[in-house]
Image (tube, rainbow, N blue to C red; front, side, top):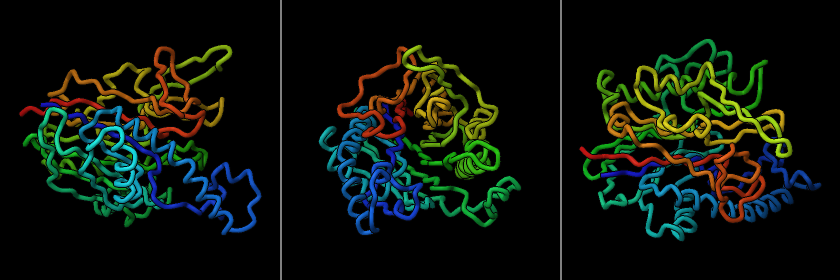
Length: 371
């Protein structure tokens, strides 16, 4: 009895317009920055036209990427609300996979932009085993103080003890697959942001992600018991905005690119995998071929890295010791630099930078759920 599980940051699946760029240039779309706009009313009109024109191609590509995962269950990040998810599934994904993901769940988290984690599930697996929703529990309310996780480093970043730990949520979803229980933990950790206080964005925000990872582990250990949690059937799925390795890119398309794997001294992922608590199954792939995200600030700063994770409990990973996840990269824009031998055929209408399926790539794995 197999289950196809996937995770995907769909990048701003919104059903509302963001007009904040009129007053905050950091939020202004680069297209509108080309034009002299006389009033806020004119800005809103142009932003609506731009967003609508761009969204159709983008969401066709997003749907193609999801269809390519062949997932029975897909965990998602950056979903506005359940109405946006329903409209996307019916208007785009349904045309590709038919009566697919009838079960959809999300809840409001802590993100200031209103982007949440969500899950879509088929009624049954490809093999015909029923997928049944049991319950959903949000942990968005948990504070640093409640879990004893407040540190001087967090205080230096402006995080108070009574503030909530998760920047979005740790959404706990209990379900059964063919009668076998499975618990999913949907996460989207703190983004890295820009350099600050003499540190790069990753280093500066690391304490927040470490606290999020510690909180996720505690939630799981309290749920299943610290001594037995690693042996239960659960998976942590989502965008953790951190990596243990990256592939640095040098050179250019004229003289050729060079790729070097660099190990990081610290990562919030280590908090979760420590002691064999769970396994990052993407690390079953070759080092050069684990990336789910292309980062660039221009030719001087480019790398490929894994930001998107399916972490299987020790027990579930052991029962699926030979399972290797797939990474769907066909929805990447043409600016993404692929190491030799990894090139893929892009989905139709993918652009140089946009439209694209997302700035992230979906990750999918087939799991044996036999008792």
